[in-house]
Length: 192
Length: 176
Image (cartoon, rainbow over all chains, first blue to last red; front, side):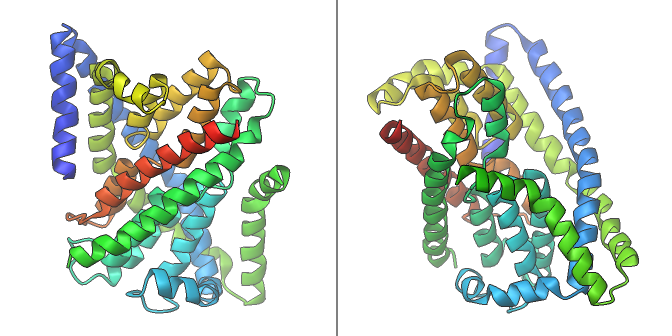
């Protein structure tokens, strides 16, 4: 599916720009986007190293395991295929909390770490495991308590009450999150 | 309530670093060596995702700058009208699952044009905060560990995006 969508995006973009007689826009945006991608990953190196370093310290101190143990009732329900006290559960929880607080920068390293740890217990290395699908369903529809970036934009635009969208965002994300988890469970049954 | 949440977010990272290091000291972990060992992975992980980042960001950029969005706006606007959703929000709804940067740009534009406290401004703010860049996350997260078959992940992610979008429209028109 991602193959088709990827190709459609590129083909339709080129065709439309061509019809408007502006093929140079495509050349320019393709080059610029590729460079932006590398720039983003370079910026990520620092943040990744910082969080993965701290995670290692937390792991060594037994904090991640303690956290996983504490949340066992929830994780058992959400990730039945992951062994209890597995480090992946700690990373997943950290990713969830970072997204909850609108700390996108911190969420990515935890998320990638969680994927690595889930891959270690994945039997078929090229196929997404049940736990990975559930984790990404959670991650892409994460409940948000504090949409930090957007509050910043509203503040800059002179809003009388920049934080008034906290409640509406929490409502919309809670619904989305619930739907994602339920759909994930239903779909799993049909994709054996 | 809002200010409490805001304060928690402000203190979360310093608090977390402080707590981890303090706790690890009590447990007599070789903190510095341990940190370095973990941090070493940062480089390889960030470099590993470059191909996926390039592929996704390039495709999204071509899609966006090619002018597909204005075309969709022209032909799908009627459908949005029918659902009582302002058509101005359409480009944001389409770009949101594809690119965080592009959708933030569109959202900022709506907020600045219509005002942050207008119906459109509030709706755009709620939508931007409510959904995530599903495509991007799937491509990068799965790519980083070499997963080729996503199974039903994309469907679940996109369905959740649509539901969050509709929930945003519902709650914003109810409350404000």
